[in-house]
Amino acid sequence: MATIYIDSAHSDEKRRHRLYGGDLFAFSPTPSATKLAELARELSEAAFAPHDPQTAQEQMPAERYVEILAELKPTFIHHPRAKELIAVLLSEVGADIERTYFDVPRLRTMAHSQYMNAGLALQFHPHRDTWFSAPHQQLNWWLPVYAIEAENSMAFHPGYFDAAIKNSSSGYDYDEWNRTGRQQAAQQITKDTRVQPEPQEELELKPDVRVVTPVGGVLIFSAAQLHSTVPNTTDRTRFSIDFRTVNIDDLQDGVAAPNVDSECTGTTLGDYLRASDLEPLPAELVDRYREGARATLAAPA
Ligand SMILES: [Fe+2]
Image (cartoon, rainbow, N blue to C red):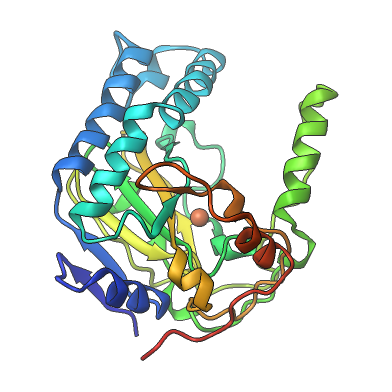
Protein backbone atom coordinates (compact mmCIF):
# COMPACT_ATOMS: atom_id res chain seq x y z
CA MET A 1 0.00 0.00 0.00
CA ALA A 2 1.51 3.33 -1.08
CA THR A 3 0.78 6.63 0.63
CA ILE A 4 0.71 10.00 -1.12
CA TYR A 5 2.01 12.66 1.25
CA ILE A 6 0.89 16.22 0.48
CA ASP A 7 3.03 19.11 1.78
CA SER A 8 4.51 16.81 4.42
CA ALA A 9 6.81 18.25 7.06
CA HIS A 10 9.06 15.15 7.12
CA SER A 11 12.79 15.75 7.25
CA ASP A 12 14.53 15.04 3.95
CA GLU A 13 16.00 11.83 5.41
CA LYS A 14 12.62 10.46 6.56
CA ARG A 15 11.11 11.49 3.25
CA ARG A 16 13.81 9.62 1.33
CA HIS A 17 13.22 6.50 3.40
CA ARG A 18 9.50 6.61 2.70
CA LEU A 19 10.14 7.21 -1.00
CA TYR A 20 12.48 4.18 -1.00
CA GLY A 21 9.57 2.29 0.54
CA GLY A 22 7.26 3.16 -2.36
CA ASP A 23 5.39 6.23 -1.08
CA LEU A 24 4.86 9.36 -3.18
CA PHE A 25 5.29 12.98 -2.12
CA ALA A 26 3.58 16.02 -3.63
CA PHE A 27 4.15 19.67 -2.80
CA SER A 28 2.02 22.74 -3.39
CA PRO A 29 3.66 25.37 -5.58
CA THR A 30 6.97 26.64 -4.21
CA PRO A 31 8.57 29.90 -5.41
CA SER A 32 11.40 28.17 -7.29
CA ALA A 33 9.29 25.46 -8.87
CA THR A 34 6.95 28.20 -10.06
CA LYS A 35 9.92 30.06 -11.56
CA LEU A 36 11.23 26.88 -13.18
CA ALA A 37 7.85 26.31 -14.87
CA GLU A 38 7.84 29.98 -15.88
CA LEU A 39 11.28 29.63 -17.48
CA ALA A 40 10.10 26.58 -19.43
CA ARG A 41 6.99 28.45 -20.58
CA GLU A 42 9.02 31.51 -21.65
CA LEU A 43 11.46 29.41 -23.71
CA SER A 44 8.64 27.32 -25.21
CA GLU A 45 6.53 30.34 -26.11
CA ALA A 46 9.51 32.07 -27.73
CA ALA A 47 10.30 28.92 -29.72
CA PHE A 48 6.74 28.44 -31.00
CA ALA A 49 5.78 32.15 -31.36
CA PRO A 50 3.23 33.26 -32.39
CA HIS A 51 1.54 29.94 -31.52
CA ASP A 52 0.54 28.54 -28.13
CA PRO A 53 3.05 25.71 -27.50
CA GLN A 54 0.25 23.47 -26.25
CA THR A 55 -1.57 23.53 -29.60
CA ALA A 56 1.24 24.60 -31.95
CA GLN A 57 1.33 21.27 -33.79
CA GLU A 58 -2.06 22.10 -35.32
CA GLN A 59 -0.52 25.18 -36.97
CA MET A 60 2.53 23.72 -38.71
CA PRO A 61 3.86 20.68 -40.54
CA ALA A 62 5.02 17.84 -38.29
CA GLU A 63 8.64 18.22 -39.50
CA ARG A 64 8.74 21.85 -38.41
CA TYR A 65 7.16 21.01 -35.05
CA VAL A 66 9.75 18.30 -34.40
CA GLU A 67 12.53 20.68 -35.47
CA ILE A 68 11.44 23.35 -32.97
CA LEU A 69 11.26 20.83 -30.14
CA ALA A 70 14.69 19.47 -31.06
CA GLU A 71 16.13 22.91 -30.46
CA LEU A 72 13.97 23.93 -27.50
CA LYS A 73 14.65 20.89 -25.30
CA PRO A 74 18.47 21.20 -25.17
CA THR A 75 18.13 24.96 -24.64
CA PHE A 76 16.19 24.27 -21.46
CA ILE A 77 18.49 21.44 -20.35
CA HIS A 78 21.58 23.64 -20.57
CA HIS A 79 20.02 26.84 -19.28
CA PRO A 80 22.11 27.99 -16.27
CA ARG A 81 19.02 29.48 -14.62
CA ALA A 82 17.32 26.06 -14.57
CA LYS A 83 20.18 24.54 -12.54
CA GLU A 84 20.16 27.46 -10.09
CA LEU A 85 16.42 27.15 -9.56
CA ILE A 86 16.71 23.43 -8.84
CA ALA A 87 19.20 24.07 -6.04
CA VAL A 88 16.84 26.60 -4.46
CA LEU A 89 13.85 24.30 -4.96
CA LEU A 90 15.69 21.48 -3.17
CA SER A 91 16.36 23.80 -0.23
CA GLU A 92 12.75 24.95 -0.17
CA VAL A 93 11.58 21.42 0.55
CA GLY A 94 14.30 20.70 3.10
CA ALA A 95 17.00 18.86 1.12
CA ASP A 96 20.64 19.55 2.05
CA ILE A 97 22.21 20.93 -1.14
CA GLU A 98 25.69 19.88 0.06
CA ARG A 99 24.59 16.22 0.19
CA THR A 100 22.14 16.21 -2.73
CA TYR A 101 23.24 15.73 -6.34
CA PHE A 102 21.03 16.17 -9.38
CA ASP A 103 21.24 15.56 -13.07
CA VAL A 104 20.19 18.15 -15.62
CA PRO A 105 16.49 18.97 -15.79
CA ARG A 106 14.67 17.77 -18.90
CA LEU A 107 11.78 19.39 -20.66
CA ARG A 108 9.41 16.76 -22.01
CA THR A 109 6.35 16.91 -24.17
CA MET A 110 3.50 14.51 -24.77
CA ALA A 111 1.52 15.50 -27.83
CA HIS A 112 -2.26 15.39 -27.57
CA SER A 113 -4.63 13.00 -29.29
CA GLN A 114 -4.46 14.25 -32.86
CA TYR A 115 -0.77 13.49 -32.93
CA MET A 116 -1.08 10.02 -31.59
CA ASN A 117 -0.84 7.15 -33.97
CA ALA A 118 -1.14 4.38 -31.42
CA GLY A 119 -4.43 3.28 -29.94
CA LEU A 120 -5.70 5.67 -27.32
CA ALA A 121 -6.29 2.90 -24.84
CA LEU A 122 -2.59 2.07 -24.76
CA GLN A 123 -0.52 3.04 -21.79
CA PHE A 124 3.00 3.76 -22.91
CA HIS A 125 6.20 2.10 -21.88
CA PRO A 126 5.60 0.97 -18.32
CA HIS A 127 9.08 0.89 -16.78
CA ARG A 128 11.21 1.50 -13.74
CA ASP A 129 14.08 3.96 -14.21
CA THR A 130 16.21 1.43 -12.32
CA TRP A 131 16.01 -0.86 -15.39
CA PHE A 132 18.04 1.88 -17.15
CA SER A 133 21.09 1.82 -14.83
CA ALA A 134 19.67 4.37 -12.38
CA PRO A 135 20.85 3.80 -8.81
CA HIS A 136 18.18 2.58 -6.38
CA GLN A 137 18.75 5.81 -4.45
CA GLN A 138 17.48 7.88 -7.36
CA LEU A 139 14.46 10.07 -6.75
CA ASN A 140 12.51 11.59 -9.63
CA TRP A 141 11.08 15.10 -9.37
CA TRP A 142 8.27 15.95 -11.79
CA LEU A 143 6.61 19.34 -12.44
CA PRO A 144 3.95 20.40 -14.91
CA VAL A 145 4.77 23.45 -17.04
CA TYR A 146 1.13 24.20 -17.91
CA ALA A 147 -1.97 23.06 -16.04
CA ILE A 148 -2.44 19.30 -16.40
CA GLU A 149 -5.32 16.91 -15.99
CA ALA A 150 -5.38 13.20 -15.16
CA GLU A 151 -5.67 12.54 -18.93
CA ASN A 152 -2.30 14.11 -19.72
CA SER A 153 -0.35 13.34 -16.56
CA MET A 154 1.66 10.22 -15.74
CA ALA A 155 0.54 6.99 -14.13
CA PHE A 156 1.98 4.90 -11.29
CA HIS A 157 1.46 1.21 -10.73
CA PRO A 158 2.38 0.94 -7.05
CA GLY A 159 1.23 -2.68 -6.80
CA TYR A 160 4.43 -3.57 -8.64
CA PHE A 161 6.74 -1.58 -6.38
CA ASP A 162 7.88 -4.70 -4.54
CA ALA A 163 6.72 -7.29 -7.05
CA ALA A 164 9.26 -8.57 -9.56
CA ILE A 165 8.39 -8.22 -13.25
CA LYS A 166 10.03 -10.31 -15.95
CA ASN A 167 11.94 -7.71 -18.00
CA SER A 168 14.80 -7.23 -20.42
CA SER A 169 17.01 -4.96 -18.28
CA SER A 170 19.84 -7.54 -18.22
CA GLY A 171 20.72 -6.46 -21.76
CA TYR A 172 21.10 -2.82 -20.79
CA ASP A 173 24.27 -1.00 -19.80
CA TYR A 174 24.10 2.79 -19.60
CA ASP A 175 27.80 3.24 -20.38
CA GLU A 176 27.52 0.95 -23.41
CA TRP A 177 24.33 2.77 -24.46
CA ASN A 178 26.20 6.08 -24.47
CA ARG A 179 29.14 4.66 -26.41
CA THR A 180 26.88 3.14 -29.07
CA GLY A 181 24.89 6.37 -29.34
CA ARG A 182 28.04 8.38 -29.96
CA GLN A 183 29.24 5.89 -32.56
CA GLN A 184 25.89 6.03 -34.32
CA ALA A 185 25.99 9.83 -34.31
CA ALA A 186 29.53 9.82 -35.71
CA GLN A 187 28.49 7.43 -38.47
CA GLN A 188 25.36 9.49 -39.07
CA ILE A 189 23.10 6.54 -38.50
CA THR A 190 19.65 7.96 -37.98
CA LYS A 191 17.77 4.87 -36.93
CA ASP A 192 18.39 4.03 -33.28
CA THR A 193 18.69 0.28 -33.03
CA ARG A 194 19.61 0.18 -29.36
CA VAL A 195 17.35 -2.05 -27.29
CA GLN A 196 15.46 -0.45 -24.39
CA PRO A 197 14.49 -2.47 -21.32
CA GLU A 198 10.82 -3.36 -21.19
CA PRO A 199 8.46 -5.73 -19.38
CA GLN A 200 8.38 -9.25 -20.76
CA GLU A 201 5.08 -10.26 -19.27
CA GLU A 202 1.51 -9.02 -19.36
CA LEU A 203 1.01 -6.38 -16.65
CA GLU A 204 -2.07 -5.35 -14.73
CA LEU A 205 -1.83 -1.58 -15.30
CA LYS A 206 -5.32 -0.69 -14.07
CA PRO A 207 -6.22 0.75 -11.69
CA ASP A 208 -3.34 3.21 -11.70
CA VAL A 209 -2.53 6.24 -9.58
CA ARG A 210 -2.18 9.74 -11.04
CA VAL A 211 -1.14 12.84 -9.10
CA VAL A 212 -2.27 16.20 -10.42
CA THR A 213 -0.65 19.27 -8.88
CA PRO A 214 -1.09 22.89 -9.95
CA VAL A 215 1.70 24.50 -11.99
CA GLY A 216 4.59 25.10 -9.58
CA GLY A 217 3.66 21.96 -7.66
CA VAL A 218 6.19 19.12 -7.46
CA LEU A 219 5.82 15.35 -7.38
CA ILE A 220 8.62 13.13 -6.05
CA PHE A 221 8.87 9.36 -6.53
CA SER A 222 11.45 6.60 -6.35
CA ALA A 223 13.19 5.49 -9.55
CA ALA A 224 12.13 1.95 -8.62
CA GLN A 225 8.47 2.91 -9.00
CA LEU A 226 6.76 1.36 -12.05
CA HIS A 227 5.33 4.23 -14.07
CA SER A 228 4.00 4.90 -17.54
CA THR A 229 2.97 7.71 -19.85
CA VAL A 230 -0.72 8.40 -19.97
CA PRO A 231 -2.18 8.58 -23.48
CA ASN A 232 -2.94 12.26 -23.86
CA THR A 233 -6.63 12.41 -24.70
CA THR A 234 -6.98 16.13 -23.91
CA ASP A 235 -6.70 18.84 -26.56
CA ARG A 236 -3.44 20.21 -25.13
CA THR A 237 0.09 18.89 -25.45
CA ARG A 238 1.62 18.21 -22.07
CA PHE A 239 4.83 20.05 -21.20
CA SER A 240 6.60 18.83 -18.09
CA ILE A 241 9.95 19.18 -16.36
CA ASP A 242 11.72 16.41 -14.54
CA PHE A 243 15.06 15.89 -12.90
CA ARG A 244 16.59 13.25 -10.68
CA THR A 245 18.44 13.45 -7.38
CA VAL A 246 20.59 11.19 -5.23
CA ASN A 247 21.76 11.73 -1.67
CA ILE A 248 25.45 10.97 -1.22
CA ASP A 249 25.05 9.56 2.32
CA ASP A 250 22.55 7.00 1.05
CA LEU A 251 24.91 6.08 -1.79
CA GLN A 252 27.76 5.62 0.67
CA ASP A 253 25.64 3.63 3.15
CA GLY A 254 23.74 1.59 0.56
CA VAL A 255 20.37 2.84 1.81
CA ALA A 256 18.00 2.58 -1.15
CA ALA A 257 14.77 1.27 -2.59
CA PRO A 258 14.82 -2.53 -2.82
CA ASN A 259 15.92 -4.08 -6.09
CA VAL A 260 13.27 -6.61 -7.02
CA ASP A 261 14.05 -7.19 -10.70
CA SER A 262 16.68 -4.86 -12.24
CA GLU A 263 19.59 -6.67 -13.87
CA CYS A 264 21.15 -3.87 -15.88
CA THR A 265 24.81 -2.91 -15.58
CA GLY A 266 26.60 0.43 -15.74
CA THR A 267 25.46 3.49 -13.83
CA THR A 268 24.05 6.94 -14.50
CA LEU A 269 25.82 8.35 -11.43
CA GLY A 270 28.51 10.03 -13.52
CA ASP A 271 25.86 12.51 -14.70
CA TYR A 272 25.07 13.89 -11.25
CA LEU A 273 26.19 17.30 -9.97
CA ARG A 274 26.25 18.59 -6.40
CA ALA A 275 23.37 21.03 -5.98
CA SER A 276 25.49 23.60 -4.12
CA ASP A 277 28.33 23.99 -6.66
CA LEU A 278 27.78 21.57 -9.58
CA GLU A 279 30.75 19.35 -8.57
CA PRO A 280 30.39 15.74 -9.81
CA LEU A 281 30.16 12.79 -7.41
CA PRO A 282 33.51 11.38 -6.23
CA ALA A 283 34.83 9.11 -9.00
CA GLU A 284 35.47 6.18 -6.64
CA LEU A 285 31.84 6.20 -5.54
CA VAL A 286 30.64 6.20 -9.14
CA ASP A 287 33.06 3.34 -9.91
CA ARG A 288 31.80 1.35 -6.95
CA TYR A 289 28.29 1.46 -8.39
CA ARG A 290 29.51 0.89 -11.91
CA GLU A 291 31.25 -2.26 -10.78
CA GLY A 292 27.93 -3.59 -9.72
CA ALA A 293 28.05 -3.16 -5.96
CA ARG A 294 24.40 -2.20 -6.17
CA ALA A 295 22.68 -1.44 -2.92
CA THR A 296 20.02 -3.98 -2.18
CA LEU A 297 19.22 -2.92 1.37
CA ALA A 298 15.53 -2.55 2.00
CA ALA A 299 14.44 0.85 3.24
CA PRO A 300 14.02 1.17 6.98
CA ALA A 301 10.42 0.67 8.09
FE1 LIG B 1 10.79 7.09 -16.21
